[in-house]
Image 1: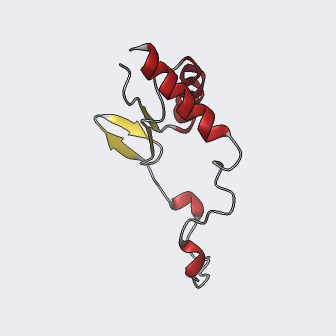
Image 2: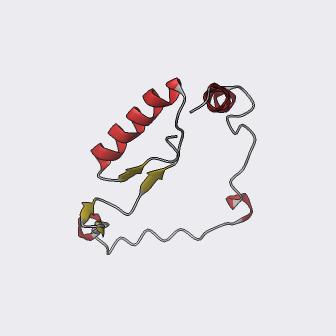
Image 3: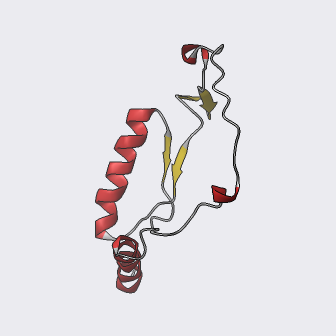
Length: 99
């Protein structure tokens, strides 16, 4: 990977950590919706099974962390921490570009 690509990827990480890029005062779009609360007390939480199989691997839930960042030196720590979290939760962690 060229130095310019490394620099660009590092800048993306830095930008995402700066004030103003953290999503303050940004909504997720659900603010306009109001849902009726329905607690479903007749359902035992322990009876709910979210396990899934993906390419022969059993997952605790069908969740995937993918293509977060790559290439830059800072990305190694970020990806390692994301991979550890995914492994602890029984989720998939997939790398994006690793040129």
